[in-house]
Image 1 (tube, rainbow, N blue to C red):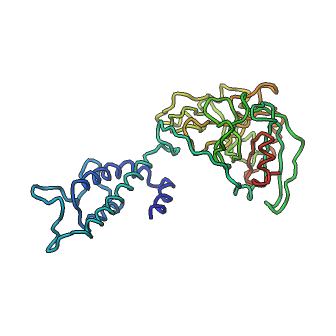
Image 2: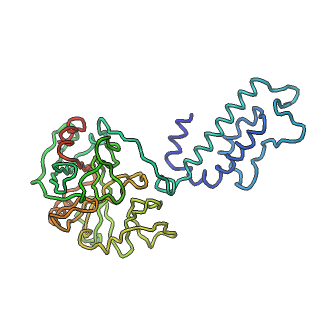
Image 3: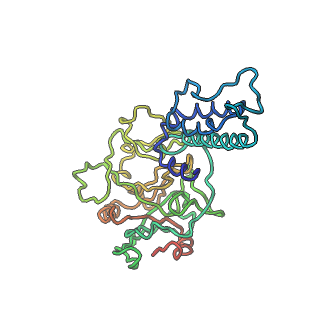
Length: 354
């Protein structure tokens, strides 16, 4: 049951409900349970809290309050006295209420799925396979000579019928650049990385290595000017910001500041002020269920120079990016793979890469 509840709650449908109504009553029930032996009727109170949440200021109705002279070792219920069986029920019930409280605390998160200010390192792991690759029919492969290299080669691939057809190159390789300090394992479809290699962190000027989905295209043009796109598009305006503050609930998202009632970030990038590099670009789903401090707002955009690395994005020339945007098709489930060449060759067969 715990597994099923966790899966359901993970969807986020009850997040606001739990925060506003269930957490305080659940904690109060636990406190009272430590002082009081409970009957069979009381053992189902956690479920009733979900069905009929009380107000946070009121004590939960129906839960007995200790009174003078009440035995701390047994409770009279009608003509019978609860003994060993009741004790077992109490222990099970108290355990369930504790789980409920932990769930409520787990759900006391911000809208992007992280506790405000929370910092923890997700365990390192590398997927043996990439299930999403089976549906992918467009692939962008970004490779470098080594982890610390800045210059990159970018090759497009496509296939017509999923894994039934082999990958075919599209066009010639494109020249590109990545972060000034090379690659580091990011968080994506591949997992989180493995020991012995750098790990992407906020502000480290490294580009994330791994396999990632593409979220949307952004640019300065109005939608009427980019009707050729077969991808979701977001126009950059004077109030468009990329949030890189790990403490913010909008961390690792592009937002319209004018549409946010209570901005909670102290650090962001005005995308309009960046100018040239953000004339158009693609947002990469790195660290998409944000872990604070593990890197944010990773794009494929226009480079400043063929010799200058970025602060963590992947960049190409304007003509090459325009060519890529004409090619991209959201219906073909495109992915991007970014790896040093030795890692690419090592993982190629396992991940069904070209």
